[in-house]
Amino acid sequence: MMAKPESGKEIDSITMIDLPMSAPAAGVPGYPCQGFSGIEKKVPLPALMNDTFAWGNTAPYQVGNGAGDIKWDSDPYQNLSWHLWLHSLRWLGNGVHAIKAGDPKATERVLAIVRDWVRDNPFSWKRNTSASESTMHRTNVLICVRQSLLTQLKAKTLPAQYKWLDEALMTHARYLIDNWSGAHNHGTDQSIALLGVGCTYGRKDLMKLAAQRLNKGVRTALDEEGSTNEQAVGYADFNYRLWGRAADRLRDCGVNPGPAIETRRQALGEWLATATTATGYLHQIGNTGQQKLPNVPGTPMEYVATQGKKGKKPQLRTAIYKAGYVFGRTGWGEKRPFAEESTYSLRFGVARRWHGHEDHTAITYNWKGHDILIDPGYGGHQAQARQEWAKGPAAHNQMTIPTATAKSPVTRLVGSVSTPNSDYFQLSDRPAEGVDRTRDVLVLKDPDLVITLDRGASSSPQRYETLWHLAPGQKVDVTSPTTAVAGKPGAAVRTHLLHIPIGGEAGTTTVEEGRENPPQGWFFKDIFTVLPAPVVKFTHTGQDARILSAIVPAAAADQVSYTTRPAGANVVLDLVVGAQRVSIKITPEGRLTRLP
Image (spheres, rainbow, N blue to C red):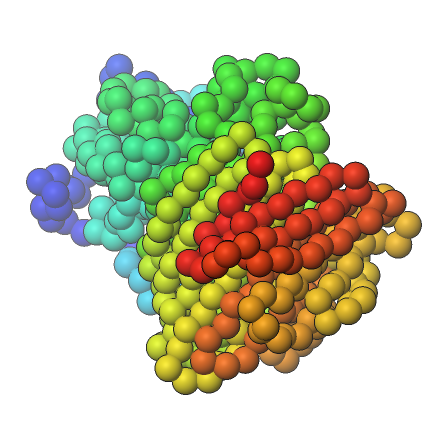
């Protein structure tokens, strides 16, 4: 039975009335077709005409009877994303283009599939997660279908036989009104789609509600410093584009976006520029794949994308954001080539939410264009062991306590000091029941390297493991109980991972790679491809632990060594990296300071 819009209901002082309109009001600008996000590329027109759907790296699958009667519960690969994108209708994109071009068979088939969805999924379709979660995407597809049909008919008003399409769009508007997700990317997409319905039908009430939600949402989705509430750098990139689209669509529909969207989006652009490696890739924090920062002319993002040739240089070399991020680098290409700077990230802040990982105190590090300490990447939404591991503490460069019950901590940045050749941070939290954790971090320039001191304290014996995740394809040799050396065979760069004893503590140095149960030692190249990647583990046992690590990348020909010596109540670590020497003072309180 075909879904029909409900009669009037007051929501946020906006009343939806049972009045599907078949043409925009006079003078209202247009809401353009929003496209299909590339999903249509997997479904060429011949496949669509055979009711065949494809997504990702899965084989095409016939979801219908060849005449537009679709089995919407099809889920041959038991994949949440596959099923959601089926219900989004974005896979109809090539058929929508064919409608606009006047193809009668494609028109018949696309309309049959859309009408089949409407009939088989009566309002409010909330019991079907894929149908409900994809509502805003499907709304935009219905708008595209309507626009293409009007173009083919060379009409401004749909004939009566297509009244069901107008009714379906108004029903989708009802769903978007009643089920706003709030101030994050999903809610923003919903508001843009609701704006699209209002703009399409000249419904000022719907446009007003969408604009209100967007202006309310941006103040929560993006803070004054540009940080998003998504807890993932990849979603920050997505939000930059999403909020730009929101402002553009408001203007298209004759609505003033107001200052908040542009002001906070501009801050987000600066944030993204700092959240990059010297090669222009984003630090992989949270649900973030391997992706380059986009080139946005006239912004700090352009400066990074062009390696300093164009755009505005970001303001800070070391940026600390109150939402829980540190992004630092040795420079912006002022004294050495841009691509040879070293860059790092460090996490703290509120507990995990949305697209974040259990990565507090974790570091990523890129040394002169080489990935040294990596995040495991993003494994998609499948509830499988490796995907779940990728979100957890054991998948990140931090001290873990596997013998205690892990919890999502709130992590404080206790203090920080930056000098021209070093950045120091101290972080503190409770990542497991009954265990206190402190991490002191010192990132150096000339020589470029990272030193951490992890301290754990508990009332009962625990196993403390400081983990260092390395890029795939490397061979790791544990040359002594305190040293591991990693590198690709024949490569010009090696990473020395030093497990330095201080105060008589004894520990072990081991390597894991590609373990299945429980998972450890993996890297998601993308959501379809996972590769084994080595993890170096420094382990101590007892009630308390102090684990001093030095991560020292160097040319393959360079010798790396260290010694420690007492200096009153302090300990001094002397490091030799090729022809360079550096000394670091370690206080009883854990503070790390580079000595002159």
